[in-house]
Amino acid sequence: MTEQLEKKLASLYVSEKSGSDESGDGSEGNPFKTALKAWHQGGENGTAVFVEAADGGDAQKPKWQPISDSAVKKVKKLYQQDLKKAEKHAEKEKEDLARREKNLEEAKGIVISEDKSLPAAKQIKLRDAKATRDVRVKIFGWVHRLRRQGKNLMFVVLRDGTGFLQCVLTDQLCHTVEAVTLATESSVCLYGVIKALPDGKTAPDGHELVVDYWELIGSSPAGGTDNVLNEESGVDVMLDQRHIGIRGETLSKILKLRGVLTQAFREHYIARGYNEVTPPTMVQTQVEGGSTLFKLDYFGEEAYLTQSSQLYLESAVPALGDVFAIAQSYRAEQSRTRRHLAEYTHVEGECGFIDFEELLSRIEDLLVDVAQRVMDGPNAYLVHELNPGFKIPKKPIKRMDYSDAIKYLKEHNITKDDGTFYEFGEDIPEKPERTMTDQIGEPIFLLRFPAGIKSFYMKRVPNPTDPQDKSKELTESVDVLMPNVGEIVGGSMRMTGYEELLDAFKENGLKPEHYYWYTDQRKFGTFPHGGYGLGLERYLTWMANRDHIRECTIYPRFVDRCKP
Ligand code: 4AD
Image 1 (tube, rainbow, N blue to C red):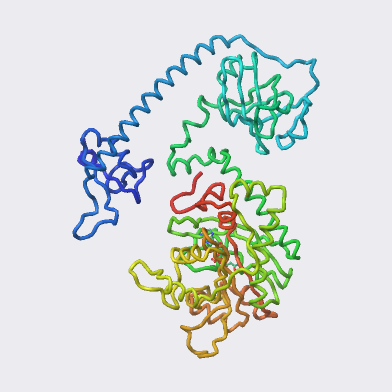
Image 2 (cartoon, helix red, strand yellow):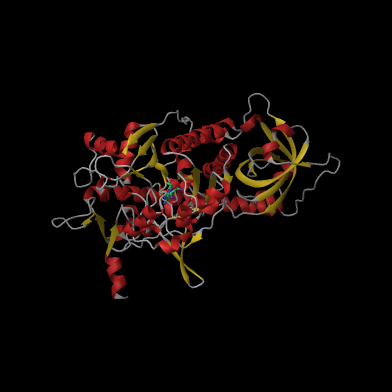
């Protein structure tokens, strides 16, 4: 045995904060998340288990503490429960196997065929089920749920992406090899008639498909996807098996709402006379600071994945008038938070010949009108089901200056980790911002941030007291904060002067020659304009009341995850 392995077996490490039961190996560098996992991996047999101190440890108290007696008592109980569960599971598996083998033996030789004397079946999608009762139909889909009752009755909940339908299979239809081996997530074609249920029986939509014939299209392993993903799966497994997870009811509902929401944004802009633009996402300029740029090798030249389409939208206004884009943006955010993705869908608008007040009223109109469109549309049920308490925000949305937010934090004793207060000129990070927003409990337009903490392109508010004092310089900027989510929109008026913009490039260490096409706009007919970017996933997180932004995108990308 190598020295390293001996060491690994000698002690196991558990960190609730940074460990993982799925990808951890119990070593100090890659600890487990739970003591239970460590117990299964050797703790029960006497291997020493160390747990990370809740506060990370200090000079007096080492980071790794031997597991406490009370924790051992607790974990032993859980361990015993696990053993019992496993035993029961194995017994059931054995019984199931015996039954399946017997049924299978009997099933061989049973063949079903379509009764040609019945009317020809009309192929439908489940969204049309209600309108197609009492005629013979055929429906393709996946077995979402399956329940067997005795030998002669099977209930299938069929799913086809447009809806769900309870289906009943009886007698011979339950006896074929395909029937006795049928598992959830198999794809099938069911033939029969959708009948309203008699009083006393219940099923979704008050009807069920009485099947008269069926075909298996694609089988699924015994137990369906349960072996891959189930209620006990940890976060990493759920993310690895996302392609399976999205078949579930909640995730598929969120994804459906996402499509509906995207369409509502587009319809809002079209109704207000904006033109849609699709700018490139491979770029050689930065918009929101170098620290979150993804670099790529573009035929030998350095390029980046775009952080925002803003600069291109600004260039499009003189050509197309008010414009919008719904495109991917990328941020190499190092932190795993509930609201950050590395790739997200950015809804951005840019408007010419407006002032700051008009910009704010356009953002307000966007937020309210889009919610209204979704709630007035045929898919409002998705919001009702995901977030029954959803309310469309009321105009006017509360406004608050950045300087007043700093005062608010002080008055409400919201401090930094070291107990000191945030001072004017400092960025207000996610945590205190959320605390404030959640306390206030309604959407907030946070206005006029100091220039020092905002992007280079933002128009300055004229400083009447001391035009030379850069530390007091404010911008015509806005962040929209939503309870439970935090910032969902960032916007501003843009600088219009050529020289002023060149100075801003210099101050931010950017090379103006890379931005010639951007600065040219200030040379050829400069004009007052402003715009904003809204994170689609953040709006959806708010609308569907999700805990985590990752639920709001099909295959989330964040630090250390670029699959599936
Ligand atoms: O505030 P940001 O960085 O502003 C811009 O990018 C501007 N150039 C937009 C513009 O004026 N056209 O980002 C705008 C919004 C944020 O409010 C947030 O909703 C979203 O984009 N966003 C993210 N969403 C998910 N994950 C991330 N890592 C995000 N970073 C920004």
